[in-house]
Image (cartoon, rainbow, N blue to C red):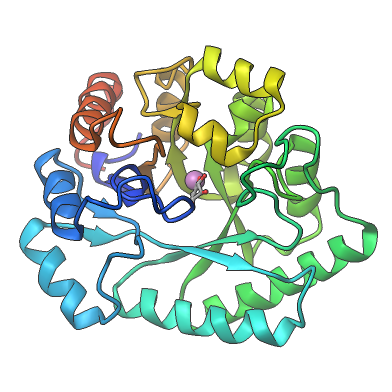
Length: 304
Ligand SMILES: O=C1C[C@@H](O)[C@H](O)[C@@H](O)C1=O
Ligand SMILES: [Co+2]
């Protein structure tokens, strides 16, 4: 049994302001976002583009609110651009996160991704990497992983709808073709379920590589409609395909049980991008926290 403190709960700013679709939540300020996360009793955050870029300034805002930086997203272009471009941008990102005390760096390959395209059908036009693209991706990730290790950090790969690493098969290939010492996995419940994957299967296969978790839920009817209409990823977000844990189709109780029982040591970040004008970010952040608090296994030891 593990101590409660090995698992910490954070919240992503994407519910207040969506960096993929800045019109969603343009009016919400950085201070509102972090104050409401703190009010909802989260102890960590990821980084949005309204956050101050200077670590000293950012710390001044986060510390009084008892918020730590859990991680931040990095877009890699290993399949489509020279490695050196990704490497240089990654090194700057790593150094910023290191300064902020984060231990993991979220990496997602955005070469050929359709996640940012407003009119591209999500399910029909998802990229499929060639062997040569897979090779560039996996060797590049191992190299980024080495750069992270220089600072005692890990990269956690974010599988994602509309990218070349979305399905169970693709996640398996990525894990098999990268060095476990250099490349870990981010487990995002919303993306897995939206894609039609089996949450338990992916968890059990790659449990030892999972070093960061995104908790988001799916509104089943909306997800179904998106698929039937050939909508894009961004349209899916606008329509409300994603929501917070406790508000959709996923049962998080057995997942959380597994994480506690199997000694998961890291962050669980509530991350539910939806339109803040329709889903008040504070109310939803609070709803998720109450739901999670209600399903945390009660019989773990507080002392081990
Ligand atoms: O972790 C994430 C970061 C976002 O920018 C992304 O589009 C979202 O879907 C996600 O899971
Ligand atoms: Co995510």
